[in-house]
Amino acid sequence: MNNLSVNPTKTTPQISFNADSGVLEVSGQSYPESAVEFYQPIMDWLNQFFSNSTKQVELNFKLNYFNTSSSKCILNILRLFEKAHAEGKPVKVNWYHHEADEQMQETGEEFAEHLTMPFKVISFK
Amino acid sequence: MSAMKRVQARLNLDGKTVMKTNKKQKQSEEYEKIFKHELDVATHAAKMLEDNTLKKDEWKSEYEALLKEYKALLRQAMKMTKIGDGTQQKLLKTQEELALANEKLERQAVTDALTGLYNRRYLDAKLADAFETAKRDHQPLAVSINDIDFFKKINDRFSHQTGDDVLRIVAKLLRESVRNGTTVARYGGEEFVMVFPNTDLHTAVAECEKVRKAIESYDWKTVHLDLAVTISMGVCADLSHANSEKFLSAADEKLYEAKHNGRNQVRF
Picture 1: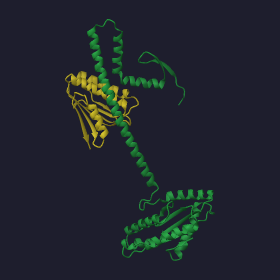
Picture 2 (picture 1 turned 60 degrees about the vertical axis):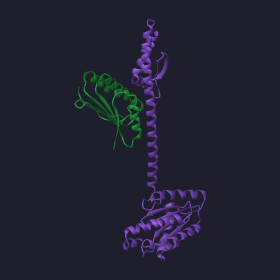
Picture 3 (picture 1 turned 90 degrees about the horizontal axis):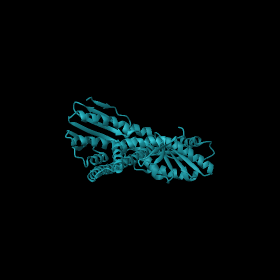
Picture 4 (picture 1 turned 90 degrees about the vertical axis):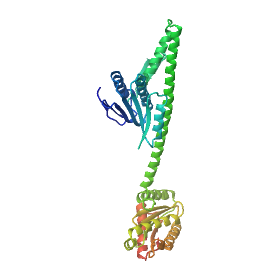
């Protein structure tokens, strides 16, 4: 599987996946005109990855703002990870938020609720 | 952009015809793609409803699967609502902070940093406006321009720090000595301008005299044992001048007179 790298824009986050380390990172802000257009290729890529690999995947979110459509896409991505987790694949998700950003912390905790896979909310300075 | 929107007929979830513009249709399709999984579930359920061959236990498992999906969707909807509300709160907070920052910037743009008085930029606009208004409404208006006596000597003999202290204290005395509604500005170096709206020459001179005395009698020894500060003031209330610049120049001529007549006095 190849590395995945999408450069950030004003309205879309940076996406990077290191195939060697198995770390997928989504960072920045997300309010694309078309959330599907932006997230679908990542979903497709993840689907393909999970069907081909049993490697551990770590998903790191470092977002500071996203719109509602993006939140639905994030939920879709999380569902993919839950499915992989249910199939016994080693996955974990980390939700990073700036320590002063209470809203992003609460958002991470909200996402974490009801999930069965490992999901950590981590603050940074 | 053209106001023409092609209206299209399309089918909604229940198979009913709805009319939508191209843009709105595109938006709808966008959300249908995001909710593709959920729409697929609904489509499947509708198909099952029409299937008369299903046995009871098949119905049951269909219903269970649907309930599971429904619960998952409900959970998602609640999460998204909560997260959306949180984001809106954050944006509102940002908006408030931005408004406060803007207010501060606007204030800074018209304020002299050292004394906290209005700056020259504000004064020029304010005086021009007051001059026009007074002329139009046939109301009196007075202006005074004031200069600390021997300020350069204060700076040289004591220090620039002392000079700054003097400017700050004079600014405070100016502000506190005059009536509400008087605009007090630092015009430049050690020069201050006051605009007295609705005030005739006699009253403005009395106001200036109050200020002059306040400065003269201030206990300057608290700043430096050998320090004494006075101010010279020129007043004009003659609205026959062509514009506010000439109006202020006339006051400046009176200030010149005050300086040459021994300082520490109000001339008009």
